[in-house]
Length: 358
Ligand code: 57M
Image (cartoon, rainbow, N blue to C red; front, side, top):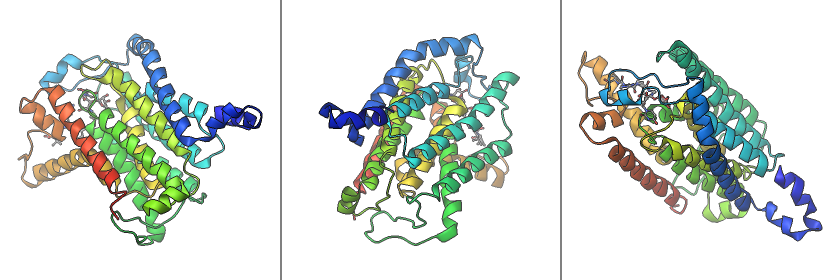
């Protein structure tokens, strides 16, 4: 909004020229979302406690019993600070920006319904897995229908490490994009089981995608790095700035020992958005590296459940997802979290290095 209001005045007041730069506005979007969530956070936590939006805890992990009643639905705080900051700093004429915001809020709505039912029923049963999956697919399909109308849409699959364009998947690209979004949404959700465990790697992935989106949206830098140029998506870097800021602001209160959890409203929206960002900048395969931690957590569940069923009750891990395995081995929670963060930073750096490896 500030861009739309103030940049036209730059012919008279040159100081407003600065609003032209996506980098400038991305940084301010980050700072705004961070400040808003840190300032609003305590009031928000008090409000969640007052309306009794506390977490119900299953009895299978004993050390989590002390977390019972911790306010959940912190994802609402992320949504508030992110949306406010995007509306303030982005060029609101960008269709790609609005679709990204739609994906974020759409997945958030599915998560909100799930959380709301859990809190209202005072148990761990929100939406049925089938209803949740249907909601996620619906948002992803709608996102693709909107994206298909933009010049940014292309059905080519970019392959990392190669200078040449990858195969044209035609209509098959759409189910692939939907799998990327829904898979990423569920990956972040599964990872969200220890204080700060999901939001740390999400912030790292947000920084990586801010860079990928900026580079892909800039015709000259994309040509220099020989990555696919995607017209009209540069403005989404401002969204990524707000995404990182809102995530860090939430981490302020979710850091061990957490004062609130993000809930499904947070995990589904953040994960689904990361998937969409990957689709938007044609880095679908790189998401496997950027979000490698979410991939590993999801794989641990797939392997555990598969092995459990195949062997009639035997397990590979003490408990899946993987973070529970380490917890049950006696590794302190804060150590697991920080080690997982270290892994996610390394994965983020590895993904960024692929920009130059062609
Ligand atoms: C939700 N939710 C956390 C919080 C958070 C198929 C199966 C693997 C599914 C999986 C599952 O349900 N995963 C998705 C995980 C829960 O956190 C809430 O949920 C939101 C995210 N959706 O924001 O609102 C608990 O996690 C802890 N937590 C923190 N700090 C945080 O910042 O400590 C969360 C955020 C919170 C809190 O204790 O209550 C969760 O873990 O429930 N199911 C599982 O993950 C279960 N695994 C399992 O059953 N494994 C079996 C199977 C695969 C064969 C096995 O390995 O034998 C675990 N769930 C729980 N206890 N509750 C098992 C242990």
